[in-house]
Amino acid sequence: MTSAHPRIGITGASGRLGRLVVEALLRSVPASRIVAGLRNPDDDGAKALRALDVEVRQVDYERTDTLDRAFAGIERLLLISSNEFGKRVDQHRNVIEAAKRAGVRRIAYTSVLHADTSPPKLTDEHRRTELVLAASGVPFVILRNGWYTENYAASIPMALEHGTLFGSAGQGRISSAARADYADAAAAVLTAAEVENGRIYELAGDDAYTLEQFAAEVAKVSGRPVVYRNLPETEYEGVLLKAGLPKDLAAFVAASDSVVAEGALFEDGRDLSRLIGRPTKPMRETVAAGEH
Image (cartoon, rainbow, N blue to C red; front, side):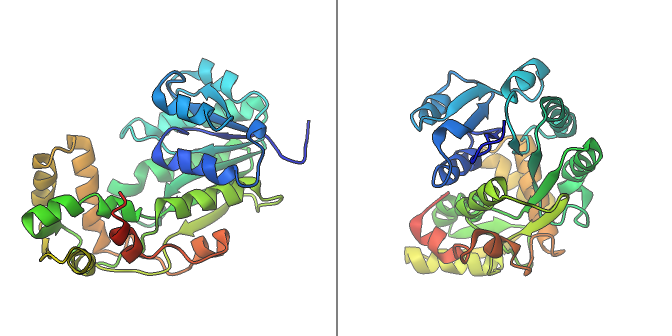
């Protein structure tokens, strides 16, 4: 049954992006029309979402029984990409097929910037998911999210400890934005009365910077010397492993950094600021706030 406010579902709702999307939706959508999906409906993340008065349902990308129950009555769905590398295409296919069975009328998917042209080591699973979505017959929108500024801000403590920001991005420019900017974009697409079927948004920050410039901003804000040291991808992965990152994540971060030099994370089309109706949050503000 159609209402003034379609029932909206968000997968991965207890994650950092998902929670921000829920909060963004609540600015214009009644809590009763929002369904937060997450793998464990009994964990602390679920409790925090229930405190917002939204409905919480179990969404396990590998259990189709949870998907069929979770998507009942959902009209618009945000599919937040899985973080299980190597499994994502099959997991996303499960979600898309369940959404089709449930009669979902719009799926928005969080892909990655330049998924069709960037090196496969960074984009392959996203590109393949986009193809599955296009073939599903369900109206869809692709949100090709660029890098979160918070991803680099998370490296600030180690950079301050060593006086060095490590990476393998060379002089590549990064058009990152705050995670909340991307959340607002997802909310805008989910609540829009009409969206062009198959529309692809290349979402990125208004301003771009190199990691050398990022290190200089960290030094400026902290009052401590910090320089950028560029490393080959394999060496940078080793630094991340020593810092405690899991192997798969360390490999992904190092690979992501290495393609920056090829322009993979630069975008000046300003789809993001147009979609959210305001400028994106500058990198310097995220650094100054210590957000990560």
